[in-house]
Image (cartoon, rainbow, N blue to C red; front, top):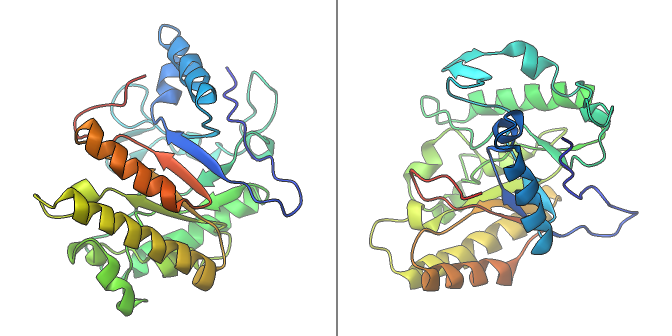
Amino acid sequence: LALRTYLYNIVGDRPFYFNGFNSYALMVLVADSSTRGHVTRVFQQAVAVGLTVCRTWGFRDGRSMALQKSPSIYDENVFENMLTRVNTHTNVMYKDDPTIFAWELINEPQCRSEPTGNTTQAWIEEMALHVKSIDPDHLLEVRTEGYYGPSTPTRLQDNPNIYSGQLGTDFIRNHRVNGIDFASVHMYPELWLPNGTSLEVQLQFVQSWMQAYIADAEGVLGMPVVFTEFGFCSNSTSRDQFLQAVYAWGAAGLGIVQPCRGREPAL
């Protein structure tokens, strides 16, 4: 089954703006003939509402069909050959596949034992160089939450809390890496801000958060920014106001996700 995501259709200098979605479990679903139909329905629904980019995981954690069976225990053969694998349905190598928009190095990297960010930075630099040595054509991102770090002390006040600046990540520094093509940011005010924070304050945070990253992506990094994850768990009225605030500011791209803990997105 070839999962076409209708992407990578950039001609000349024409901007490419998109609305996308996160659907993490597609690889697991498509591997099982009894659930394969879910994948088709997900893409049919996405096309129907104008979603043009899907982000899915290229790994599986846990015991069932796992590529990561336990912490630090990986199936290295799979990861080492992912970019050069030939799709058995299209006969196209993944690194040459025009329907793939971008590769993601890692999701929400954190290194709490080393808050300076040096460990995370070294890993990003090494992996970006490695991926680009195999596939220089596709876009590459880090996929951070977007927390500011030690390299921009005046920006630490824009983080949702003090703790988020001590996780070993650094938005500006992490994206000033050869091979990283666009910036990525997440946005979960309902989870990040203190319990009991009013909807009004959360919406103010959304505006200031997006303004800061759009400005820094353009003025400091000189690259597009994509708000790759955002979501809201509360009642539909509050959620609609949250989404309207996000769409009002926009960016190069948006990727909605439902962040409610303990619940998988409905397929």
